[in-house]
Length: 458
Image 1 (cartoon, rainbow, N blue to C red):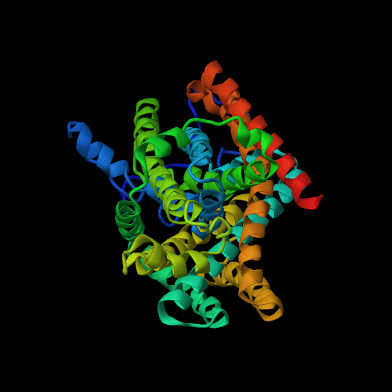
Image 2 (image 1 turned 90 degrees about the horizontal axis):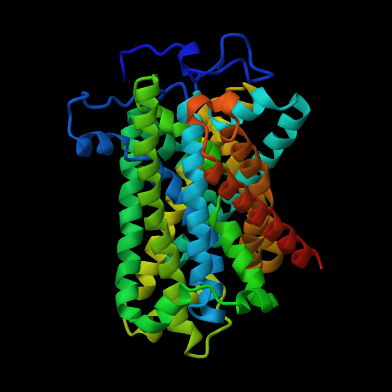
């Protein structure tokens, strides 16, 4: 824990002139995640750039977890099985959008000392803040729903555990999160990076076994006009974007970048923004690899072998080993799924805490917050499993991604609004070019989400 006290008023950007309409006097009235705020010390100023960069490595990988959670698997599998490598360009586009948005979230947190939830509360009218909070809570429950299903399915595939029992067992991860948080934030980051390494290793082996044709694979990264003209392909493409860009990750990232004990000065903030941006960009490139790998394995294994209808995780698990001719392929697939589900619970826990404390100034015990969120996610899984069986759970997983996609504007628009405001950001305000690009990305997300909602309801 850093011994250097950081005052509330020191979190204000140097040129701030009371831009937060509903802030309490004295600036930010609470530190985001106060128990770990500025708890990770940095090397001395004369340390090498490599050591200073490594001190900032961690938050980006925690954020990247949300971009490869079990909800992504369903859309990536469906896209690869139905349309081959064509939708790789959509995965790349959504990942580039994520890199931009996460960099903006990190900038907001470092420059203002506020996470996105606190910024919303202090800028918008309380009634609007309540609406934004409810939208965030719905997004977290939808994300948690995907994690419950992914963990339960993985336990069923690996150990034959019934789905209902697997969903119940997933509650225990609340205690894992509490244990790691009590050990220190670096332990939490190390745990996540370890599981990410397992996921990447599992898919590297499967990619090698699938041996996709390089020419077709590279062509898939070039946007194809048919994505827009083919209604089925467009629907899956929008689902991929909705499953990739996670709204709660923007709240999470704007908070956890403040765990570093950087100097709350102009120079200190500039360095922190630079390294935090590199951290999240590199981590999200790993997420791009994993999401692309899921689609590539599905395309190589199913699209050209008469299994274009594979959309369920269980079907993919059953078919992978015989089609690829690698006995361990299915097991690696399930292990990676279990690691992804377990990993994603950590970000859900922290994001839920950040959002509740940021919007409501309400603090409840972490175990109670985690059990509440996980309980709300387990109930739909239990009901759907009892009524419709495993097939219904698969549809529920896809529905959770649609819900997440619908929540994106509620996080993206406030974020871009804040980082574009010179009164709030001071000299850390984004440039005009980045501002235009950010609003274009926000507009694209809005259009795609309205399209997805129309197609879903029609």
